[in-house]
Image: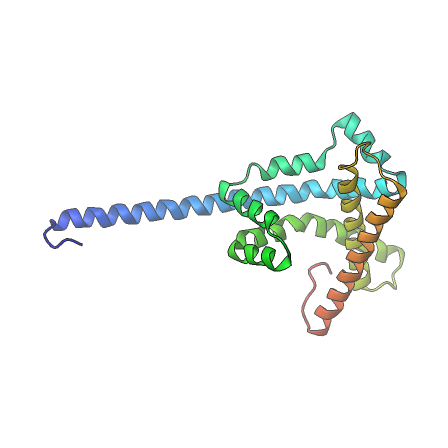
Length: 212
């Protein structure tokens, strides 16, 4: 602040500065809103990806390969395209997260970029919903099955399907070997176990589980 400046000029400088800051905030809010929309869209793509992946486990990847060759089913490419439409800031943060080595470093990047955490949570909602539908179907078939078990089962099925289609998409022949199918199924089992343990822990502390 220069005491020799005219008061009107000082007022104009402050007004312009405030207007610039308001525009920057508005731009950030808009970018974050659009990014969240793309997070959700990517999550929607993950649902048919998991469904096809479950079929891949039983067919050695033939289901996914048939859909890829005949209808252009390439979920990973679609998700990459969607993430590429996000803001430059989000893409840079995601690249930094992917490049971080080890859990601690990745956690540090995520904490410095909370939008990554929020985006991952939003993107997981469609898959959680699909897992919930599977869980309710399991309860309908086996009414004595507990809610936590059904929820864990649903999450495991989705996890196995996602893993299977992800593996198939990286193979040269676009198929799955028996070992790769078993690996995907094992991923689903591990997901179910962790989900079940998490649900029981949440129940113990009186915390509602989003999957149930």
